[in-house]
Length: 496
Image (cartoon, rainbow, N blue to C red):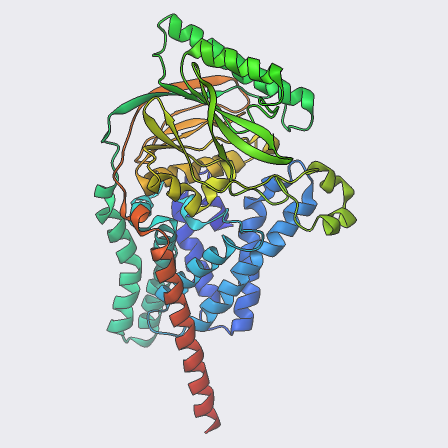
């Protein structure tokens, strides 16, 4: 529960440290079987409240099923931590094992579910600059290591008072486990900058709002499109009146046009009118059918040329945008299959739009949780990032704040301005240092216009890619191997 409370919308990031200190206390010296059970309980206590928003529209069944499955990864980590807890410098091995668990959870099953990575709870914390060093794996590893190190310091102090003997090597290792992540975070601060390297761009983020939570039928989809067109036209009137600056380009959310504008002339005309009114290119979030397949697509719509480049979402959401195990799910509850009547297809290429001379990388909604889906837009030339999203289905839950925190971490990780256009909120403009400069409320129509810095340099976290995560996974494997070998030797010695 401490770990859950450390996550947004609360800014109690530091509670992650005592959470992992308590986790280490409960696991140290236990058998791997006890670690498995305790790890599962820890996973349930963390993920049950964190992911409650997944049941807002579909009821508690899918929410509970998701948590029951995801907690298995934490259980396996618990077993591993118990196994390495008697090794010298065990906090290092234990923290690496947590990274291994997160790496696995981000990949399987159904292409993974990285929601709840420790890094995503640290947008307001002192450790955030470490995202620029090695991405979310290094940031998360540092937080977990610091928490385990905190417990080891307390344990060493208690043991020294009880025995009147100070084990200097163990005490030094404990102190370093706690201090090195903190020192590293402060040393990484020069990597965090919001200086414009490639000039600036004036960007508009449009939040049109929705008639009500949930996007279940065609009439509401048309209303959502009309709302975003109307808000864009209102913004155009403000520009004409001199109340706000003329934007270089405009960003609409995911699903701002669930009606395919290529096959529906009325939708095409509504978007065309909005684009001409504002006099700037717009990135429109649409649902598009091509060759009998559905795509969650961003469409670059130019005031002179009309629709042009497109980006098809690559990391689509299981049970939301496609339905694995459809026959099994239907046997459990037919209503769930009716919510995903046709599976979306995946895109294959990174999305980078050239908008008024600015390279804008696109990571659509759910993709922001996946390291690779954001990173390759930057390595493909993005000078800023946009995360068009649709959170209307989840009402006023914590989901939108959790996702906003992810975008803040991504801003620092890649040293890029990040915009978050959302249908119903919270939309925001985030500087490359992770600070939010403008944000909307929830379920209101609004638009944000701001001059933002453009950057092209790459942080170590961007350049290194998956290497830091791979190194930590190998470190975890080494710790497990050492623990197993030590256990076998101890048993043999006992038999002798």
